Length: 60
Image 1 (cartoon, rainbow, N blue to C red):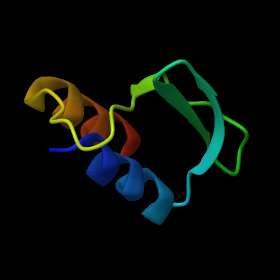
Image 2 (cartoon, one colour):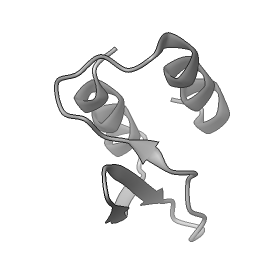
Image 3 (cartoon, rainbow, N blue to C red):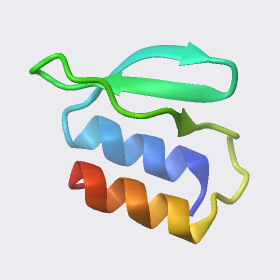
C-alpha cells in the first residue's frame, strides 16, 4: 500500500490532519485524540505490517 492511499483512508473515516513532524503525519478525531505518527513518503510503498497495524488500530 502506498502512503497516499493510507492517508486517504484516514480522511475518509473522519480523521482530520493535525500536524506533521518531518515525514510523519498526525491525525485528530472528533474527540481530540491524536494518532501515533503515521509515516508519509508520497508514492512509496509502505510496509504491509505497519499498514495493517494502523488499519486495524484505527478501524480504517
